[in-house]
Image 1 (cartoon, one colour):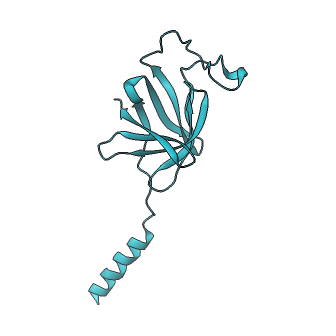
Image 2 (image 1 turned 60 degrees about the vertical axis):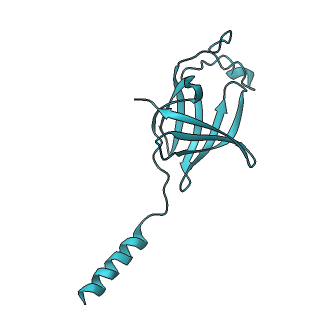
Image 3 (image 1 turned 90 degrees about the vertical axis):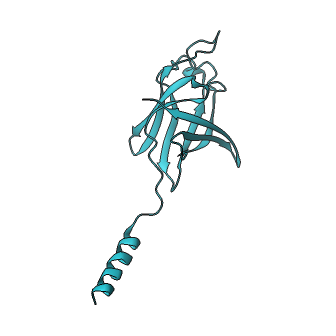
Length: 138
């Protein structure tokens, strides 16, 4: 009878386990080519990522959001600019929106942790995605 109780306890525990949850992605990340450091943190009920530090400014480009489609936003500084918005746990990945200040466009985005601890960041149009790898910063 003890074996049956143990089996029942194990089955109950397995059923109670949550579905796959996305691995945590909060923290400080160096973008591709280490151009900037982005801080990903809770933002209300979702996750957001803002430019914390610009490491390699683009020569000749002002440090403002000059490419933004909205003229009213073109004077906002790149430092503190929200790149990742509205990210929520979607199983094994996080889904939200990524903003590209170099083009002034926003894209559907997916982010997830790679086995080596780096961050896989994808910006997508329909099913076509561009992938970048970001590195954790201590």
